[in-house]
Amino acid sequence: MNSVRLPRFAFKSLGLLIFLAGMLPVLFHCGTAGLFETSEGRYASVARQMLDSGNWMTPRHNGLRHFTKPPVTYWLGAAGMKLFGTNEFGARFFLSVAAGATALATWYLGKLLFCKVTGLIAALVLISSLYFQAQFRGLTTDPFLAAFETIMALAFFAYLNKQKKRWYTTFWLSAAAAMLTKGPPGLLSLAGLIPAALLTGYKPQLKKLFGASVGWVIFVVFGLGWYLLAAIMNPGLLSYFLIEETFKRVASNTHQRSAPFYYFLVLLPAGLFPWSGYLLLALKEQVAKFRHSRSATFMLLWTGVPLLIFTLSRSKLAGYTLPLLVPLALLTAHKLRQTILQAGEADNTASFRYFKALAIFTGLAGIALLFTGYQHHGEFKSLAQIAIFSGVFWLFAAAFLGWFAVKGHRVGIIAVSCLIVPGLMFFVLPGLKGNEAYANNRYLSSQWLLLKRIATLPASQKIICIDKMIEGWYFYTGRNVITWDVERNTGFDKQAASALVLNGDEALRGAVDTDTMLVLPEKQHARIEAILDCELKTITAEGDWRVVIPLRKTGR
Image (tube, rainbow, N blue to C red; front, side, top):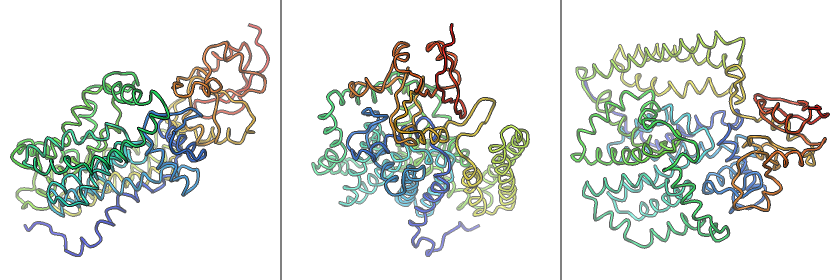
């Protein structure tokens, strides 16, 4: 059987179509759900405070200088709010641009390393994966870093092969942007790419890329300029970045983000669903070609070296390895083209068998969603309805995928597989508000409804947030809040912290009067009554949180 070839006209304006294919699914209902705690709320609050103050140099969170991350994510969040208003859509808008840029750069990488068809499949594999669809919807540093790292890798490969000035400049600008997005971890992919280039005979090109001073000037000005200015304005900041936000995240559990050593080894293949099985086949093939194939050497070291570092790190969060999804999508696409789109009928038995198994798995998952939705429809109506509609969709997808796999319809197999996860999002996102109950006394983490109620209170109303900080506070209310028994970094703002940060029972008793409102988790209600020796009356509640006012003494 002849291999499947795309007509020449199909590549006309394909770059724009791929950009939109990456962007539009992420843009779909991106402003419907409230900001999820804690990360989204924190980034959006810092971005809004930056926009409100007009100070784009110094990030602030709840009135205090906040240097846990460099400013790019805050800048882009604030820019989105400037364009579309202070709302969830504005805060998240540039995530969709980052998604489109990552998909586009992946397509170019596939063309450069393999061929046009592989590039197209790689972009589709990336866009349709569970990891991509989940991670690019949350306002954090990782989606933007993935975009800049992918562009950096593209420029790196292109310069090694073509030595053109535009790729040289693009490489250094994207490296600077990655540094300004997440600090030194933003350059981690180079720990794999540079050794791969040395092993595959690109040493002369590497000398040109890193030997000229122009690139280093670009990197220092655009990548390090903010750090240098911020360090001058805030003594001690440089050591804080290097020790607290870089070294301790890798070498200690200071930030309480530990996970088993195999965490990322499981997460990455699972995150590439529905292509996980093909990824494992591709890795097996490419490992055998290591050092004998340039593309295999580059892909394996690009993925393997950062993955090893993340695996050894004590701090583990799902988003850390998002940039590694790109080389894995490229490997998977190469294997798909070799089998599904190129091989003869006799060579495709295992491939069709995999997609038959995928159809069965998707169908069983659809049944599980239907059963779960039906079982809990009375208790958790909103999420139950989402589960039911999603289950029906997956049953239909499983039926079509199974039929195409049995008939050997190659393009149909890939098309339906590409719709499994984005199609699920089509049914999940319109009804998801972010604060739904999903179990007894357990709720999704967004506090948008509670905070919007608080935002209607007079600006003069004294409020103290107890035990935990609702990170999205400033985004929704436009005001700072006094916190009690909340760990805050006050080292750069000790004077402001004295008015905003309370610790100790005596401090709380001294700050609370009959006009004070307290915002606290439900489990802290009895504890605070005991400390204040008074009854607390709940005036509004949402999920796990309560807004209370002190009443009479309890007489204990």
